[in-house]
Length: 454
Image (cartoon, rainbow, N blue to C red; front, top):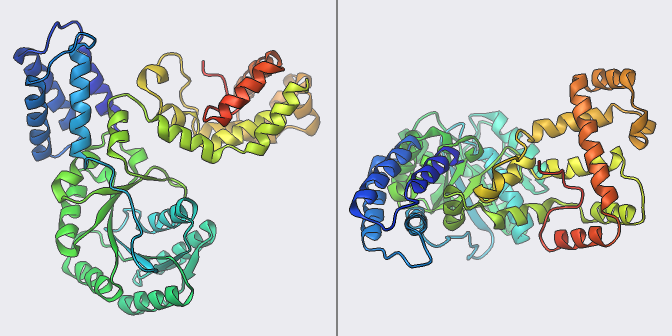
């Protein structure tokens, strides 16, 4: 998300470099470019006007310190105003009520409510150590109930079964009673959706909310819907007295207009971002960290959290001991490293959180989940002997491996070349140097055996 906007703003700020001071002329020129960047990002017009006016006012009164350039001062102003636009200080998601704490999810069909319900349950279990019960009141779409049941099994949470065709209000009421009886901390109610906003949809959501007394009423909206997302968010906000918004599919939206506009248009805070399809792809929304990413400063906090939460410490220790003691790095070890990288969303997911000046220039591209699956499939197509002794893999073996993994011989060649480079690196890191690397990883750095960034 924000890729295009980030690139445009970086070019805009670049134009201020070499200027001796901030003047009305270069402010006007720069703000025109900022306005165009926001328009291309599909930010709502009222939001653009408010934002540009605020930046112009702050920039005109800004003093350029002797240690700063006009570009640096302008970036700091943009950062402050972006944070303010998206809600100021982090709102958070606090469970301040007598259990069970009831969360009601509402939104249009296709926005990802059911998946988001499971993601939120997983986040509450892992981050807040809560017992969660899920229930679906979407009786018109039986597949929604079955989908939520299966997702509940995946994330390890409770599920309140309901008959399709039943009364949604009665289902929600019985789920609340089941949550009380089962001593659950949180009840998440997944409501029905429509293809558009209508009176029946609103009445049903309001009736469920009135019966269960939801503490949080969250609107789930597709970030890729652009201006339509804002219109539906505004309609739901006026009908249901929302407490917050969850933006989904933000990993597929390079513009980011909805994230920048929705708080200003609805007056409701963004609480979470859906950043992928998997059940762990939900992040609490932090305006300051998002502003950092928009302005190319990266999100190192999220990067460290991602690495620390996904890396298998036991596997890292095993590899460390093997390399330090002089053991030979083989394709079984490479497979383990690729699987850890896959669990973190691929190299692109990590680079996206680095500051722009570190992430660009010579960094590999396309190392996403699809490429990692291909590389793991290639290793899986090898025999035990080939994984332990890659040097025996000749031309005929490469052709067999390519056929067995559904890839091409050049794919196998690239993987073996990458392996050779990593093997050489591991060989040079015996002893103290590897121990220092492992120590850095334990302190929040990258895992041992991380593929070389070329």
